[in-house]
Image (cartoon, rainbow, N blue to C red; front, side):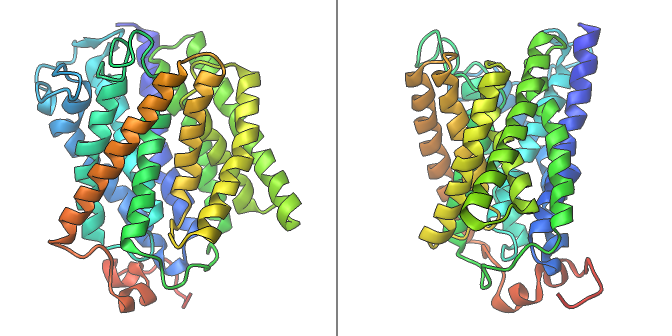
Length: 392
């Protein structure tokens, strides 16, 4: 065990959990109507709790067990065989488990943004739990757990390069979000503005800080590689914030607060798969392009389709993660065949399994609330609480 590595990954674990609670909860909560903000908070907290339990019971073993190229098996279910002194590289394996658990929490939580303001809470929990076990954990095994897309897998010695989750986190969450938005259907009031842009900005700030643990921690060591990943992460976020705001100003005549912080998230998602393989100048290029690319993806889905991906999960996370994964090969750190092949295989698996899970659950529970509950807001109709003492 290396004490410095252990101390850093303990810190990174806390930073990644901060991204979900309260970072993502506030970012999403500020974007919805005031009558739905508590429902978003509840969904994020409940997902964090449920994913933690499921990761312990089976998810970690499926992702990082030694089963075969497709899945890791159940040999480490409930952390069987893992003691305080068991090592994973230079880290206690129980710490590696905890660090990876925070990724398993935030990935299904990202999907929440696609169906806020009209989704059935029971469906959120059932779908998220099954999706983490049947989509996220197997994909994590394929790329990070020594499975079929890693070094020595179906793409040969070079394998797929996804440093911190462009495919494993952002592509899977983005595609699942787009599919669920289509299946659940649009809100009755699609054009309602965010109720609290300030809350959105505070949540985005927490996500930016937490992302240092997300990307820097994925080095699994306290060394120069982690430092470079953090630096690349910050530069990409800054560049995308500026390019989003500039493009918004050119097209619409103003640069909004919600716009600039959404650009921040686009830059963070886009650098995630590449952060361990590129330097600051490449990160500058990735972030600058991502701010414009993801904004155009938002405009395309909102204005050219009938899909109500409410908080632009696919356009920001999905498009950003896919773009960053391709940039790994553009900057010479990976094979185009491996990168595109992994994107295609993971995309097909994600869409297919997400559809089966959603359709299966649809036979035993409603996917969305009724019209009256949607009109009154999910805070009161589902949870019996109000965030604010006002009619908004």
